[in-house]
Length: 88
Image (cartoon, rainbow, N blue to C red; front, side, top):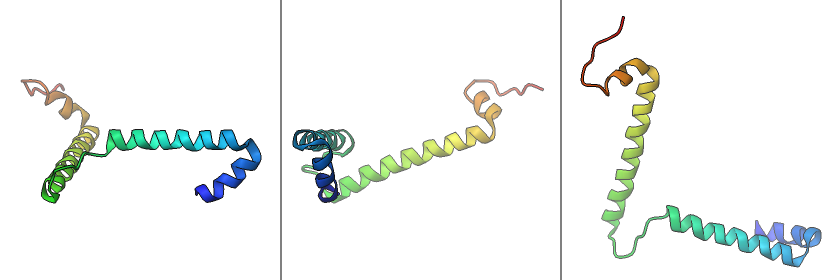
């Protein structure tokens, strides 16, 4: 992608702006990796697999709870209270 974008950007906006754009994209990529990629140093493959599976299962259970709440909003609202009396 860089190989295609560089000549086009170079001819349209100039050298300085082209390099500035690529530097900005690089900094954004570093920030993304720092925020969203887990640290793997000194962890075994089994530990990493367990972490990824637990995150996946947590996301999946939250998604299922949201779907259930959307299907039956009154029941999910009432389930948060101590009494389960239904209003007629």
